[in-house]
Length: 293
Image 1: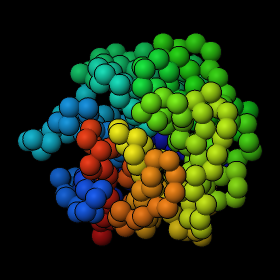
Image 2: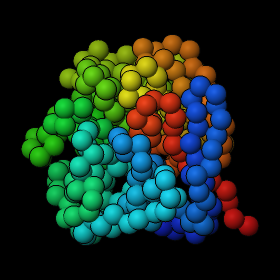
Image 3: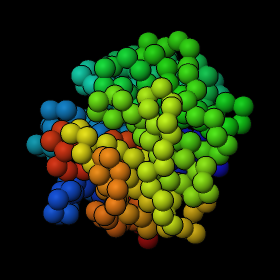
Image 4: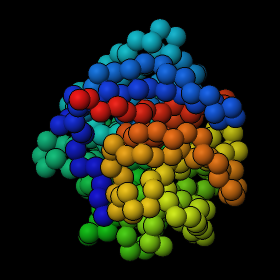
């Protein structure tokens, strides 16, 4: 079982990062920009004007109109990984930042326009993935006593609530737009698969069942579709999601059912760790990579 422990600074200069979008109906891919270093995990803002991504421990805003990137000031939070989520009103961003005390990931919140971070999860490691549509709750993956499970916590901090209790990695929790469900991925059946549960943790239901390792389900704003990334069986350990692999972005109905492949690419870790649907549910943003010689 593995989780990203540090922003991938050691690899940051060894790759070219290609920021792309894909039309989920036609499959047409569009390259927005190429970066001569590592960028990861774009979030699409609700006004459709910007993508928020992380690079080498910091967060940036990419202007879709001008193609320019701008650093988001984050105070002492300069070791952020690719688990970052925007608040429903887009006024704030929550991040997983590796603290200087012990290097472990904890969740912080600060204004999207920049500002000082506020600690939400004193316990570590905690890896953010979801923000409830009503703005009150965060969902995350956390290691407690040697087991990675899914937890929720009030957005202002407080007592965390454990939702999964099965052995093995449970990861990537994300709320459905109506707030009734949390989608996640779990290795409990042997391979990593996509699951869904009620927001209180009840009725945990397997939503994919195939010979791939499936990670990070992301629900479209209209609730009609779920996109996720897959690794080929045998390419990775089921509980690992490394970079620099041949992967697929797949899509399936929001109620479950047959998937179809949207794109095949070189990527994995960093490609689509967080929800990157466009506000109108027509496109996904993602990052593919090219290794340097």
